[in-house]
Amino acid sequence: MKKFWIAALLLIGGAAAAFGQKYAYVDTRYILSNVPEYEEAQKKIDDLAISWQKEIEEKFAEIDALYKRYQNEAPLLTQDMKNRRENEIVQKEKEAKELQKKRFGNDGDLFKKREELIRPIQDKIYNAIEKKAKQRTYVFVFDRSDNANLLYADPKSDISNDVLKDMGYSPDEKKQNAINVGVSGEAKPNTISKHIGN
Image 1 (cartoon, helix red, strand yellow):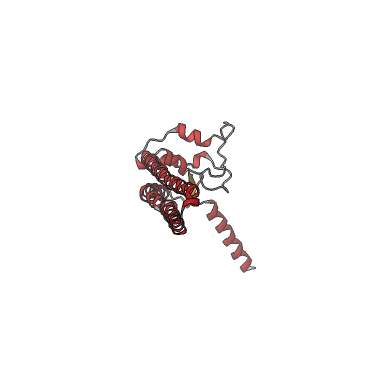
Image 2: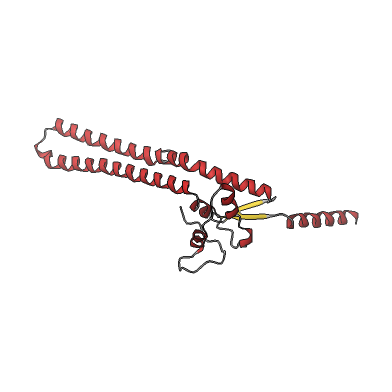
């Protein structure tokens, strides 16, 4: 009987501790939309991607032109000349694919540039969130922009604007409302939908 009462007290104490835990959430998409450095960095990355894509498309257009010219002239070429032209086309195609991988591959130039420009901003946001969580003794801080399992969030628990203010930025309520608007144009009552890519 004594063990039963000890177990019951532990269970009640654990439940009380669980209910006493504080939590909050942030919307990192909203926070990022209010950080001018992020928009500048994203524009630089987009411009680089467009430039590099154009460079690669030009290389493949050059290869296509070489191949068409080769097909037109093939009946007039000796076997040795055909082999040289084919090797040239294959080599240029290999170089274009290597350039494409170098620019856009998993560890390519675009990824590295994104890490270089975006990572410091993300770290700054994370540090501000962590500081706010420690100040207010939050046990959990959820990100509503990424968590598809978070179905409802009380607006009183949203510390996104506080984080922005701590970072030295003025929150733009219009951006918050734009992020909360659904496809139909109706405002979502703080329900969390699946993350839409940045």
